[in-house]
Length: 213
Image (cartoon, rainbow, N blue to C red; front, top):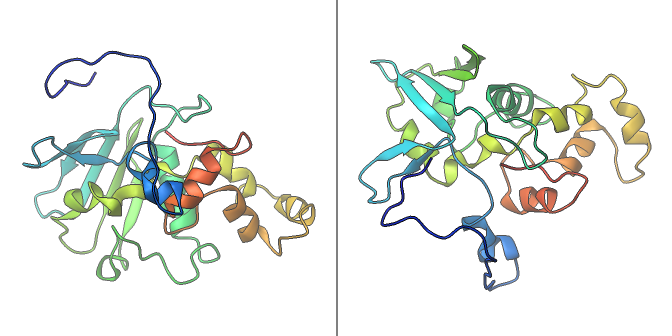
């Protein structure tokens, strides 16, 4: 349940939104229906607070973060969202040398934190991120554009296009003359590694790959 800033609104109705510029995503959709972050800014911007993460535990040296996710969250197709999806994004996409040939560096994982970084599932629905160096600013990074990627990769859908999960992935590649390998297949059906919001919006707006929180 969300405590309203001023008063409880009226549910239902139709939202109409004006779009400017040459891209619907960058023109406005980015800020209303694109994604949810692990944490978000409080309404008065005094600090950050949990969003799709229900609880955050931080070690005294700010090297270990445990994110416990809310129960009952689902992707747009009704499948549950949780720790397995986040680990799929980190370990099977970001850390995969074929999908990320330039290395795993991204907005929330700077080069200085890559060597020695790890992500693992702890408990029923929680993920522990361990960094080689203190990272006290991580929550603030995750509340901004830099934290956009954690809810973009539904494992239950995208694993069919990943060679580590589907031994017959080359058969799918052969069915599409525009593709050369499985990485092209993966990126055709899901977001690229930098979390391009345009790609996410395209995936979410088609029945074939309409996945998003």
